[in-house]
Structures are given as structure tokens and as C-alpha cells.
Image 1: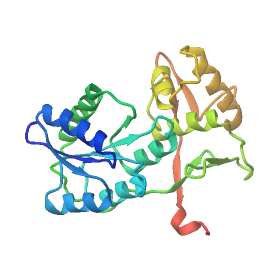
Image 2: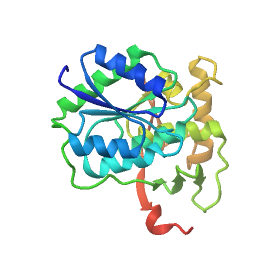
Image 3: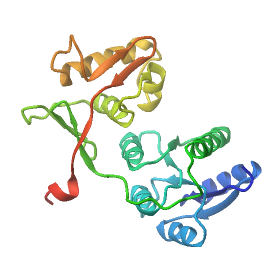
Length: 252
């Protein structure tokens, strides 16, 4: 790993310094950028092997920077977000980010995630920041068995076009399922994904919330087909489809 270059994109000098010391101490070469211009400059020189990208850069949207990177490169991206930025994490993962860190974080977690992402990148045969043919789809509506989910607007409409009136907790849980569609999620993993500080650390907490969500989105909550129970693991969102791109369908 000693030859790997990490680009740290962060507008807070103290956090940049912390990440630099942490990563350099593990043998990585570290470059820094505080905004999109710095990112473009770093990529024009020699694309890094991995990017840690703060999504809250103050004057610039980190998601826009992630989109720019994904248009031309397949370099792994680890997003850095605030504890309550669930929607940003979901959109970032849809853009093709490989993992995320939640502030405040521990340096050991940083190194563990960087090691894991680089290892996965190597395993899937990704070469050093190879250009890709096209950018991944962004800003999409999703179809969940006739339900229309708009992640950016935090809105879900039913099969008759009416608002489903999800609570914030409902939407966080659904967003976590969407970001991990067709992958079984344990109860503990769901708690982590939704930043469940408001939840008691008991399995029944997630079970009850899933039951409430099923009542709002399933055709027959007693026989759920969207959110299935995976015996011995937890739950899984079984059906999701991209419907359309806001850029071609929305009006301003």
C-alpha cells in the first residue's frame, strides 16, 4: 500500500492535517485539496488511487465534485459526511461512491475503510484511476412496485399519485434500503445506516419500524413483497427500478 496515493478533499485545515498524518503514518502518499479546483488540478497531474471527499465543503457541493470525478474516472471514493446527512450519503452511494465516513471519526476507522476499499478495488480488477466510458446515472426517480420515490425531495407517492406521508424515520429507513437494494441487511447494519441515536439498541426497534413502513408501502402488509424478511439476517429490499432522470423530466 505504500505506493498508493490518497487525495484528501476537505476545507477544514485541522481535519486535513489529521487525515494526512493518519494516512502518511500508514505509508500512503497524501495530496490535499480544499475545493473543486484543487481536485481538478490533482487529477490533471496524476489521478490518485483513492479520494476521501467531504460532502460539506461550505461554498461547494461535494456531490457535484463526486459527479465530476465519476464522469471521467473510476477511482474509489470514500465520502465524509456529518452524522445526520443520511440523504447525502444515499445520493453519494448512488453516484458510485464506495464507502463513507461519518464525522466525528476515529483514525483507526479511516485506515480500516481505506484499506478495505483499496482491497476491493484491487479484487475487482480496477487499475489505477482508469477512465470510464460514461458517468453513472444521477438524480433519478425510483419505482418501487408502482410507488415513486424521489430521494432528493424526500418524497414518496403511492400508486395513485398521492403522498405517502412518511415520517423522517420512515424515510431514513427506506433510503437505507434503497442504497442497498437487493442486499440483505442485518438489524445492526440498519441501525448504523440510519444513525439511530433516537432508537433503543434492541432488535424490536427496527422490527417495529419495518412493520410501520410496510403498512405504508406494501400492497398487502401481511404478505410483504417489497421488504422481505431474510431469516437469520434481517431484511432486504427486493424490487427497485430506475424510472427517469430529473434533468429530462422536471420543470423549474
